[in-house]
Structure formats: structure tokens, C-alpha cells
Image: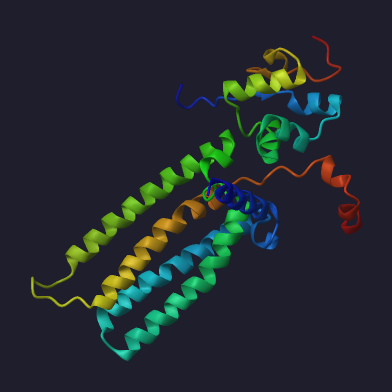
Length: 187
Length: 79
């Protein structure tokens, strides 16, 4: 079991060193645009919650919620992948696979994500308490489920978004890569 | 002290060039990511005491040859 876990960690590490979706994370500006796209994707399940709250149960609410959820998956999955590659797995690899700089970056990212999540929860509580109604007010189950999905997805994605936003441009690869004849052909 | 930028200057790039060691080789010997060496060289990351000592050990020089709180004199400059 341990060997399997080790093998999985090595595969994960190796795949994070491959520069896929490079145009999405090559420069700081591009990374920040990618983070903004990720934030937009994360807003979709929240929008689905609002739609379900006001319109569920209805076909309109169902179609909108499903559509927004598909939009969320289509945007967030590649964004999550690109930012994970950009940060070299700072927020996704096991801590023993990271060096001290990466661990420090991971802790900062988690701290900022934690504070952001806390603020989001405070806003959520204020909004929910501000809704007019009494003990008998009907809250659609669809809104609750979508809200929980939105909370989970935001909580999961925030650290990598923060790490991607903060990441400075990495130093250029050194002479090792210049020595590689394949690389020279591409230049 | 709050507000003070705790800059640690280093000569890793010079030592590396002098010994003909690549970033990846140095990183591998130290067990860190190769980008960490780049960030160290650019002064964007200050290492822990443990890593600093291991870097000095790798180059077989005292730690103060590699790291300093004051900028190192430029090569060829007097004083």
C-alpha cells in the first residue's frame, strides 16, 4: 500500500513538472487572468444557489443550475490543472514532497485562503439572516444542496487560486536546458 | 523588526558558475526544487539556517562565504 502511495506521489510530481497549458500560466499576468477565470467559475455554483433559492422547484431552476454547474466544471477543472502546474503542486502535493520554500508558500496560501473563506462565511451568514421570513419560510432543498456544493468547491479551490495569484515569475531554466539538443531545435 | 526587509545576500550563482554546477544538480544534491535555487539566487527567498549550512557544505566553504547581510563587493572592485 505504501509503495502504491509512493508511486502515485511520484507520478503526480512528474506530471506537475510537465509544462502543459503553458500559455495559461507562463507570466504573472496570465496566471492572474487564469485565477480570475477560476473565480468566475467558482461564482457559478453560488449563482446556481441564488437561482434555486428564488425559482426552485421548477424546470427553469433545474436547467439554470445544471447549466451553471457544467460551466463551473468546464472552467474550474483546466484552471485548477494549470495553476497546479504553475505552482508545481505547492497546494496539492503531500508536504513531505515539498521543499522548505514550497512549504512556506503553501502555508501562506492556506492562511490567505482560510481568511477569505472566513469572510465569505460571514457574508453568507449576514445574507441568510437578512432574508425576510419566519420559522415557516420555505427553503428549496435544491438551494441548500447547490449552496453546500458551492461552499465545498470554493473551500477546495481557494488555496490553489491564492498560490497562483501570489506566485512570482519563476527563474528561467539554466544551462541544463540549453544543453538539450531537442530544446535547441525549438529555439 | 517590523517594516525592515530582511534581505540576505548570497553568492550561490557565482559559486555555481565557478564550480560548473547546474541549478538542477545543486537542487538535487540539496533535495530541493530546482526553482528554489533560482529564487535563492535572485534573492527572492531566504533559506533556513539548515539549508544555508547545507549549501555552504556543498560548496565546501564557510557559510559566510555564501551568505551575508550586506551586499557582496562586485568582482574586480577594490576594498
